[in-house]
Image 1 (cartoon, one colour):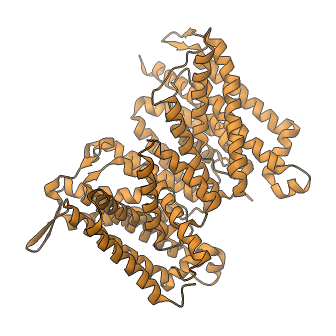
Image 2 (cartoon, chains in turn red, brown):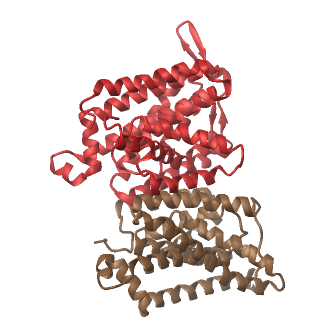
Image 3 (cartoon, helix red, strand yellow):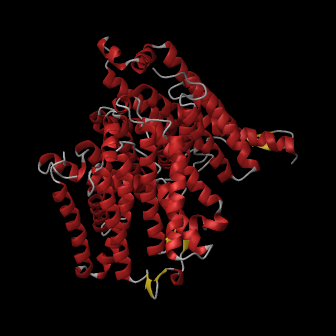
Length: 320
Length: 293
C-alpha cells in the first residue's frame, strides 16, 4: 500500500494544510466563515472515519461523542465559568468517559447489533439532554456568551469571535488531528486495526487482543469527535440538543462515505463537498434532507468507495 | 378518579399502543427475519400510511366510515407498491448487504420524510373515526373505536400467523428465512420472496398507521417514535421471532402507557431505551428468541 512513500504522504498533507492557510486570506467573508465551520466538522468526520474506515465498525451513535464534547465544554463555560482551555479539556474528558463506557458495552456486540446499540445509547444521551433541561437548556440550547470566549495566553488575549482567530484556531485543530490520524494510520497499531477490519478471527489467531485494540479505537474516535464538539461550542458559541440527535450521527457517516472511508483526507473532502452541495441547492429548494437521502443511496449503490477511495483505486495507489 | 380506574384507563391506552405497535413491529421483524435487512425507513412507511389515509378520506368525503374503509384497503396497497419499487431498485442491487442496506434505508427515510413535508406540509391533520360510540364504564366513558382497534389488530396478527404457519406462501417464506441458499436450490424464487416480504412488512406498518390515525393525527414526523419502539419490541422479542414480537409489543405498550401516565414520558423513553440497549448487549438473541445459527 503506502509503504514506499512516507515523504510523499506527509508532503501532500502539509500541502493541504498550507492551502487552507493561504485560502484564509483569499476567501470572501461568507466562505471564510463557512470553511472554518467545515474544518471543525471535518474533524468530527475524521473521528468517525477512525472507527468506521479503519476498524470497519459502523456506528450510528457518534452524535453522542460530538455532543459530549459540545456540552462538556459549553456547560463548563456557562455553568461553571471555566476558562477556554479548561473548558476544552473538560469537553475532551467527557468524550473519553462516554466513549470508554459505550465502547465497553457496545463492543460486546457485532454487526447489525452494534449499529442499533450505538444508536440507542445515542438516543438515551439525547433524551437525557432534554430531560435535564434546567442545566442544558433542553431543545432551546444555550448560547455561550461572547465575553467568555476569550483565549488568554499570558499577556495577549485572543477573541475567539474574531473571524481570523476563529479560522486559524479551527485550522490548528484540523491540522493536529489530520497529522495525528495520519501517524496512527501508518503506525503498527493502525495496521492491526485494518487487520481487524479485514478478518477479525485471523487477527485474533495471530495473537492480537482484538477487544482492547477496538476499545482503544473507540476511545480515540470518541476523543477526536469530542474535540470537534468542544471546538464547535467555543468557536461558534452555540450548544444545542439538535447536535445530539440521530441526524448528527448519520451526517458524519455520509461525509466519510462521500469522501472515501479509510482515507485520511476523505472526511475533509466529503464534508466540504456535502456542505457546498447543500449550500448551492438551498438556493433552489429548502428540501436539503432530500439531497442527503438521494446522496446516501447513490453513494452506496454506485460509489461505495467514495471520491478519494475511487481515486486511490484507479490512479494513486500510494494515497494514505 | 381513584387509583384503580386511573390504572385501568392507563392499561386500556397502553393496549391500544400495543395493538398498533405489534403490527408495526411485526413488519419490521418479518423483514429482518427473512431478509436480514434492518429497515430504518420502516417508520416512514408507517407515516406514509397515515398521510395517505388522510388524503383518501378527504378525497372520498361522505360518511366517515366509507372513506376510512377505502383508506384501510388502498393506503397499504400504495405503500406496499412503493416498498416493492424501493426493494427492486435499491436493496436488491446491494445484494442485501447488511451495512449497505442500513445506509440505503436511512437515505429512503430522508427522501420519504422530505417528500411528505413538501407535498403534505408540516401540519398535523385529523381523520374522522368511522364511528363515534362511547362505551360507558362505571368510572368513565371509553371510545369504542379504540377498542375496535385492539380487536382489528388481534385479528390481523392471527391472520398473519395463520398465513405463516398454514399456507404454502408461509412455508416458502419460512424456508427462505431458515436457509435462503438451500431454498433457492429447491426452486424457491428467493428474489421474489424478498420483494414480497419487504412489501408485506411495509403494508403491515401502513395498516397500523391507518388504524391509529383517527386517534392521533397524521403528521410527517410521526414515523420516528414507532420506528424506535418497533426496534425495541423486535429486539426484546428476539429478532425474527413472531410470538416474541407480539408478547414484547404488549409488554412495551402497556408499560409505556402506564409509566407515561404516572411519570414523565421522556423518562419513560430513557428507561425503555436503556433497558433495551442492555438486553441487546447482554442477551443479543432477545428475551424470547433462540440463538441464531
